[in-house]
Image (cartoon, rainbow, N blue to C red; front, side, top):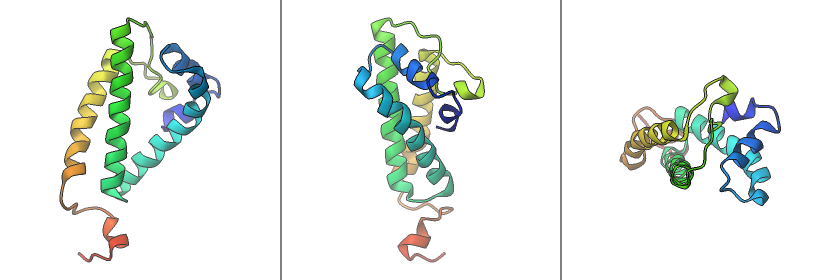
Length: 130
C-alpha cells in the first residue's frame, strides 16, 4: 500500500488501466482506496490488532490479486510491471506476482485459522490477560 501511495498521482491508475480488465469506472476509486486498505490491514496485522478480521481481509485481497493476475496471464495481456512495488523501484511480472501472492496467502492462512495468538494486542480489546 505504501509503495503505491508514493507513486505520482496518475501513475497507479495508469498501471490499473494496463491490466485491460478493470472497467474504467472503477479505476479512480480503486487507485485511491486499494493502497489505503493495503496499508491499514498490513499495519494492523503487524501490530496484532483485530488479527482474525484483518487476516481474513488480507486473504481476500490476495485472492483478488491472484484472480486478477490469473486473468491477465490467461488473456495474454502484456504488462511489464504490476505496480505492486513500483514506488520502491521494484518491478514484477504477472507470473512473479502470482507466485508471491500465493506464498503470502499460504503465510496468512495459519494466522487466520489459529485459535489463539500469543503475541498480539487483540487481548487489550477483548479483556484478556496474559
